[in-house]
Image 1 (cartoon, helix red, strand yellow):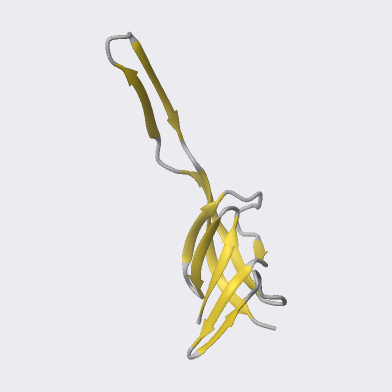
Image 2 (cartoon, one colour; image 1 turned 90 degrees about the vertical axis):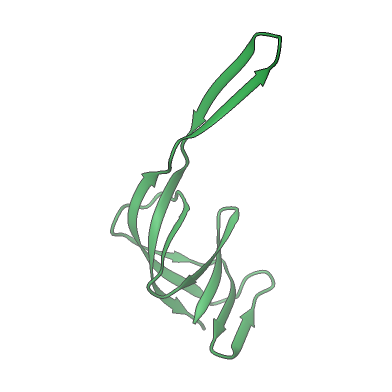
Length: 104
């Protein structure tokens, strides 16, 4: 059994026991959360599809880690103009352990 859930602007395929890195959410480590924006659930040969979300379906997960990703270096350059810019970015993330997929 697996589900496709939406968190922020991204969609993730999750199954029980999976570890997923999603965009940062404001929860503490060890806290249990519910992902209610479930788009699809597949169980053996049965598929449930929402329009856009399944009502009554949810995914229970536990927050394992809050962190920041690797640094991405952004560089801008224009030849013969003396123009150079350098910047960096680190994306915040939350690591989740999927505990349960509930279908109403």
